[in-house]
Image (tube, rainbow, N blue to C red; front, side, top):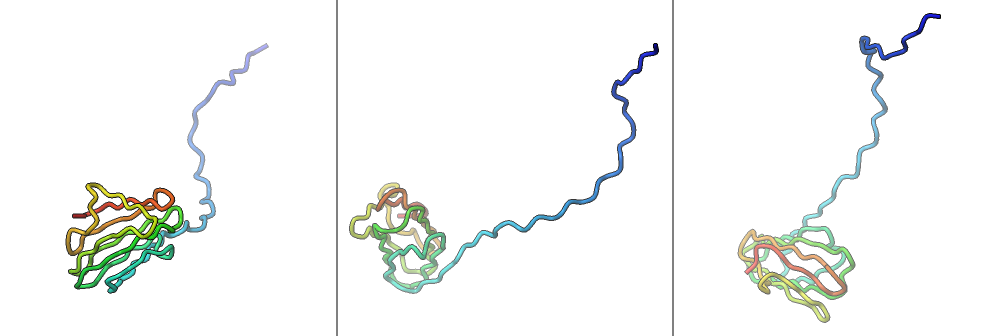
Length: 127
């Protein structure tokens, strides 16, 4: 009886299949930028995931309360000539490298992040 060889035989590739259905677009990142001319600002949960541009020409104090929600994170930019200084509110602990708490000058950024209950890290272009 003859043997049949069923080994792999390479031939030409077949035609390309049709394009599949395009999926829905993914979520778009949202970043809200808020200009703020006040000289006294208290951070609030509504400021989570936002950029606060301090546009004042006089000194600005930003108070960080102990009550911000888990995951809170915010960027602050000294957009005006008024230096921005961060202050810990009652029961809050504000940590930063070298205990620096003020922006270095106009256009200097600073970021604040809640790292524990009432505990925040401040980083950025600080003096």
